[in-house]
Length: 106
Image 1 (cartoon, rainbow, N blue to C red):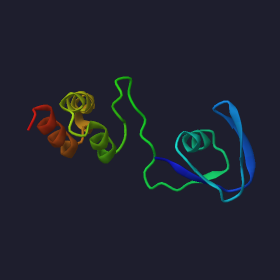
Image 2: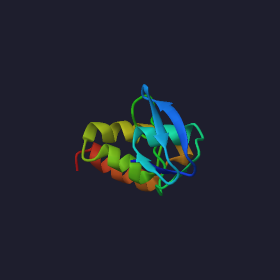
Image 3: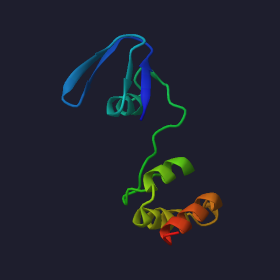
Image 4: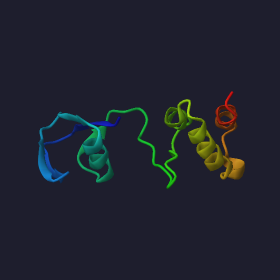
């Protein structure tokens, strides 16, 4: 989950309400994602940014983010494997090995 800290006091309209943030205040989740996406005066406190997803829901993120999304689900592993294979030479071999195992049910 994304967490950010306000670098100055400001107000923002999000999710049908006005949010008033004080300098140094921390927020997480969807509001934090929105603040980062809109270049609001915040600094990200997370080491890894949230992953974008394809239309099939597979994250376009780190190996860890893809593995977290897949879990032990063979169907998700197959979707992620297909998405990774579609990258051709840019496919990550370590991720392919994990996904092939899960997709085959091993």
